[in-house]
Length: 257
Length: 293
Image (cartoon, rainbow over all chains, first blue to last red; front, side, top):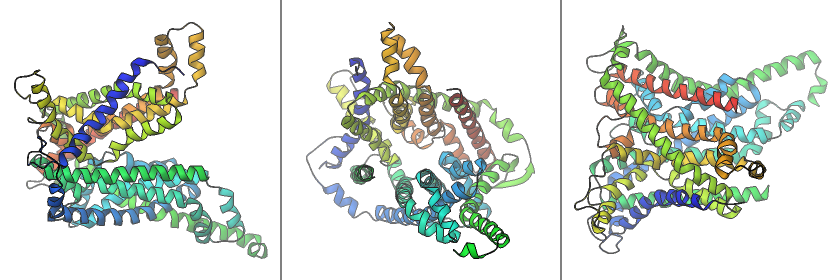
């Protein structure tokens, strides 16, 4: 097919626009000088500073606790809900409720939970962030597992029931094994989203229990430092690796099936 | 085998009972969670719009309509309209840049297509704050853009590139452009190339083919992409705060301030309701346009 020449201009503008800030950020993280703007030779010293920063380490630990806990909770709740919605209820209202947390603006969910926690007099901490992140994590797990369920063979489950298996036995021995890739993908999504989530955590965390995004936010508000460049570069490296590995894995499973 | 030994009546009631148990076991935990942590909080926010603020934050349960009259105060109405403008502008720019990009990606050979798409999505999977921070590094007084401008002799002294509405729009486009390109790509990819060929064979110029064939057929993708960019832009408070200089420029900042600084929860709730109302109208428009397509 013909590719109009003129289209290459906005095409390359898009990629230059997307990657220039990232490239500058990464380059400046290896800057030997103190200025975040003038490159004065290669150095890893800001990465060393980073390793010794207790605030960042604490934020990272908090984030991992919240992400792990909310991923476990949202994977269990979301998988059950997806099966329930697909096999045990035919209701568009319930379907809509299941995806509502994913489409609701994070700001509204954040203030809603802030108001709710205040009303039930729950103290804020890591648990309040964990419970909040489960709300949207669950919606994403439900959506991914449901997509998988529409491809799963419902007649296998019917056969299991006809042969006298209890709903639980059918779920664990027939439905779940078919859903496993969807459950894993949903869990990975919930984990990644929780690690990066800022707005909801900002409203539901206690000042003493900041997650990593909250730590970054307060650092960025304070101004540009080479240390943030180093932290940002590490985070970029982690997410780039995860995306590329996930991409490779999906291609692998696609070629196997 | 077990089921064949029991009588029809018991089998019927047993299957009815197991259906009820199944429903409870699967739907119960998730729905209970959503009721407690989603519906009740949202219901509380909505109900707060009707009450007065407490003297030290919180609410006093005295019915009032003053929150809604305050919403019409030009001071706040301007912020809402300003947010609509900034989010709308970001959406328009994302569409103008995103459409040709998605169009070209759809024509690439298979291998390059995958790479081009991953390269679009990759920045989106990196921490949101890191991406905003990258722009501060780039645009601040002594930053790269300014030093380049000075060195090229285009300006005498560094420009104030940060902390204005243009910076906010740039940040919004940068953050949500992938959400524009992906639905556009999906819509363009689905297009049957024969339709365009037929149009060309019948004598239509490329521009005419684009306006009467390609554009109408990809309209659902355009609407979805615009919605994906507009919705997170309109309610944003982080980008206007970090790139806009910390003033309450967008409705998201205003809501945040009502809850965390001014401690006027009822008015904050009313602003959130206004935010939701705009988004619901847009979602209804999208549903309507996709039903027509």
